[in-house]
Image (cartoon, rainbow, N blue to C red):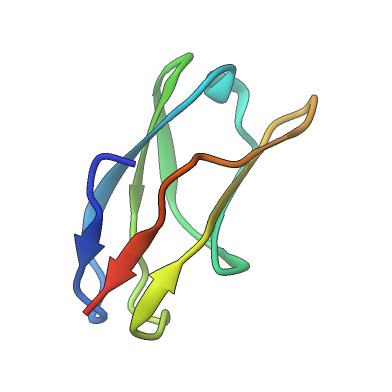
Length: 77
């Protein structure tokens, strides 16, 4: 994840990197579905929603083949 901190009010743009992300069908932060855009096969741009609480945020990317779990967390303050 390119951004490691963000505002609890939302709007922080993050980049998620990994393998085979260009076919992503869903992205979740703490089980909340978020808006995202595939920039390349290994990069997604996403926007943190305002509905998340403060603290660490786990992300999950769903692809047709499997779930990807990027190794970083976003911390909302």
